[in-house]
Image (tube, rainbow over all chains, first blue to last red; front, top):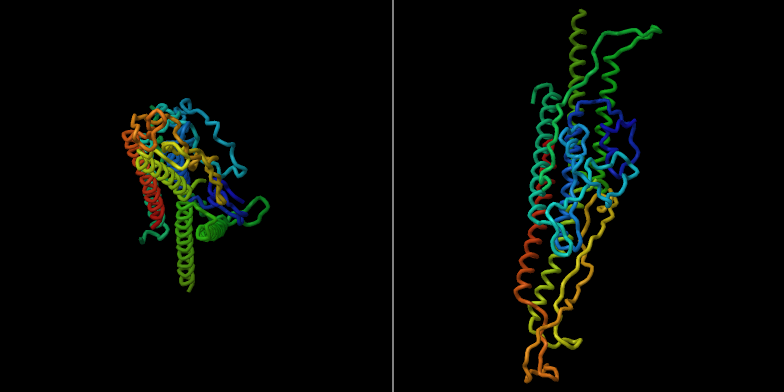
Length: 157
Length: 105
Length: 143
């Protein structure tokens, strides 16, 4: 049976039948939020990259992805600032594949030519910040895995 | 202006949740319950399953069916760690057994 | 879930679009003084018009479902602004009143467009380098 928090296979869109997955081992449960963070930052990069690509598209409104993590206290305070984007389609049939982020329009750079709201500098800054976070979380995951590996080898490296 | 950087990510501490290793208990019906043996069995099954799914993920990535890089790398690492973990537990049990074996003489 | 590869598609579409823009700018500049074309009349300044396009993926959600999209060139539109009239009665393309209509190409405007297209292209390249960096750090997990 799939314990959805643990079964990473079920989170993949192409997911085939789960092979009697017994996700009993909670050795790695601390890594789950980190993996969600990696997923989030990768999705956010796709959204930001689209904004950059659409710098000259008439009428384009740039999107952004906010963290939607129930454990994240800071995000609870930011909920009022978010507007749901009507471009956002309802969740796909596989609920486990839903992104951990909430899509919203970021029009704070103001409108430019042709009704385009993209500010290249702002989007480039966001891309840089996002990449940094992805890299840091990736390094954190590696460090934690190294710790677990050390423990698994019974303290012998 | 809205934030450029996403809100911070909470770090969760990894924790081991092993079953309570105890001596043989009896249920109300009098049948023996072996919590440690059960725990070991599920640990082995879990490690095996994790290995299999990691293998599937890796194959699917190579075939182009899966595009999740960090997910696949994470699954492979976790499978490796869990396998070595369970392997070491097995070694410890075997060592303990032989030690007891020698003691009886 | 969107992936490294979808991000590359997005960035690549942006680069292609800006390249089309560069080409039209080059054409505009080259033909800034072309008074006669096959259609008759002077060269008309050209501009690409971009639009949002979706990418369906076999391995996951489509781009639009996740707030991303490709850039596509919808058309290359002719600028309908009138050309510059110049009194040159001896010019072979002069009209009966002696005026020649030169293309509606403003060199300064084209240079500014070229700079912004170049910047946008570089931003796309940075986006690709970024995603490559992220993929590399993902590969280092558990190494």
